[in-house]
Length: 115
Image (cartoon, rainbow, N blue to C red):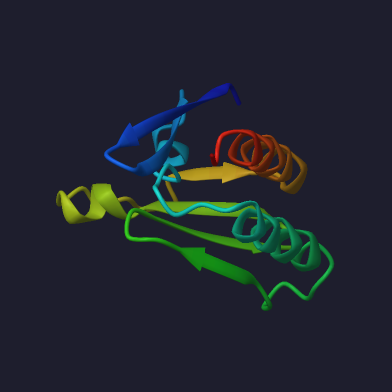
């Protein structure tokens, strides 16, 4: 998965935006990211890799939902749902390592661009 990060200013507020070929990942961009919040996602995904299949780590904001379990990380694009688009399956599937790499890269970007 290819992606880039961008820092935008909206008054005194820092916005971290994401540009990716996977539109669902773009919905992670927001004004309230901290390295600690991103690390909690990394930890949750890491821990879910070895749990029973009926146990998962779930997270969502207003635009995207993901569930991580021993099979991978599965995303639902909540913006598409609000627009009336219905999917018969999740909008994006990633393996754990691919998503964790994305989160680590995003965390590093936020650390370097939170001032």
